[in-house]
Amino acid sequence: MADPLESQPIRPEDVSEMAAYYRVDAKSEPRLLWVVRQAVETPLPPNWIETQDDNGRTVYTNEVDNSQSELHPSDAYFVNMINKERAKGISAEWGGAWMEFHDENGQPYFYDFQEDQTSTTRPARLLVAPPDAANAGFADAGVTTGSEQKMDANQRGKAGKLNITELEVLSFRSWWSEAGAYGLSKRNIDIYFNIKHNNFQVVLDNADKIYTISHIQGKEGPLTVWDLHVGAKIDILGRKTTLMQANLATSEWLEYKAKWLTNIRKKLSKELMKYDKKFAGDHDPTDGRVDSGRVVKKKGGQCLRNLQREIKKLKIRLSEFRPSLAKEIAGMVPE
Image 1 (tube, rainbow, N blue to C red):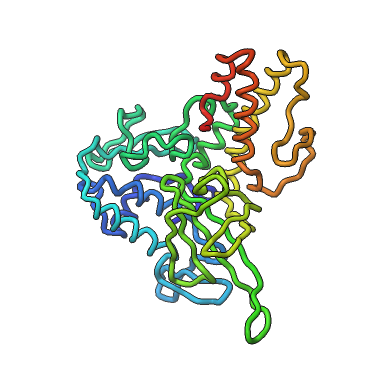
Image 2 (tube, helix red, strand yellow):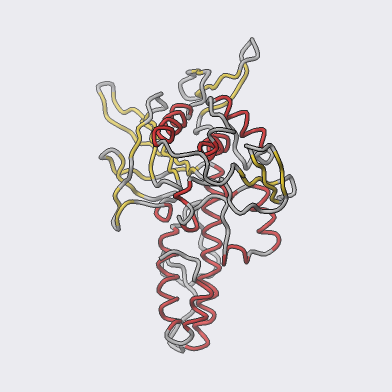
């Protein structure tokens, strides 16, 4: 498993090797390949490193307590996911086994795991997600439509090369001090959020046991990708927890989405100023101040939910004057 931001682009052979590792037959079980792809792209949790032992075997070491394991810390999670998908008994024959990849220049190409063939033309059906996740909105891995395609060349090249748009798991860490018989002790928790399925996996104190949480309730219903960012406060296993850190891939993904939404907000504001003389201009929804460009935020710390709310308000306001324009600018942002 590798961090797509620190390694070469994911290749079909990487997915095939991971499939063999998890005993998934790519030809007869293509519906499981999206789980395998996610495993390939999932980085090591914080404080874990990959090394080689004296016999050349891969060993994973926890730098906090120096514990070691020959299994990747996320193996239990993905084995569980694969077993759950197998138990559903869905037929594998739902449109081939095509999956999208990117070369070193960020250019897309497509590979069919059943026929072992490559194409530069997008197939009619891609295996980038489970069959029932095709309409999951902007959070779908590998799907960029509408306003997201209107990035400039540099943004588009960077996103393609780093596979930011294909990230499927957000990874956060938090910690706190807890009083015990021998004084204060530091506790930590790793939180993984599956973007496609809106469920959580948490690991306490780097233990082997992984807790699966189907959903976490927020102020407006179950938490989604819109609500998660560095600094967010959520309830995990009965404890109010602040997401203190995000790994590199998660931070880049959140920054990428925040920039996309911020650009939409600015476009709406610019148009609204032409028609509504009472409108004061663009402002930052996280603090209400004028957006001077000097507000310093921790990387990955901007709340996408706040940006979404602001866009919705501006869209409604601009719709009073130019409904079609408002829809064109903000139409791809889920409400």
